[in-house]
Amino acid sequence: MHRLNLTIDESLYERARAIGFIEKKSISQIVRESLKEYISKKNILNRQVELVLDAKDEKEILSIISNDDFISDNEFKSKFKL
Image 1 (cartoon, rainbow, N blue to C red):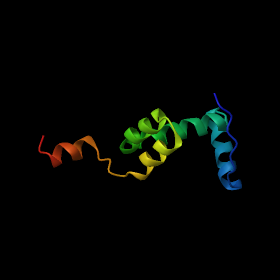
Image 2: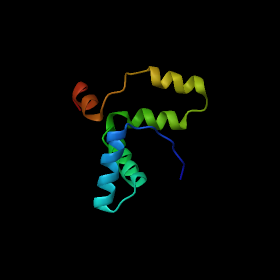
Image 3: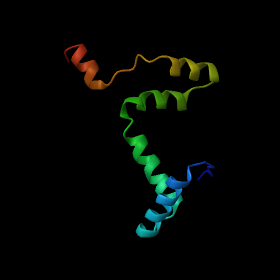
Image 4: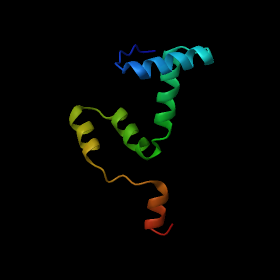
């Protein structure tokens, strides 16, 4: 696990704290679950994420990030009538 330091506004913190109390979860657990759910909804970015994680150097990463020609499998199949 990695430690993460973040800043949130007071009302968001209080709501997270109350939810944590009701659900018997820590705020850290709520944040982990929320981040995991957010990332799982970003399917369109998965290929770029894998390329960035596998990249060898900063120049390659910047090239991947600046290239927004990625399309979903369904869009590709539709475009090429597959």
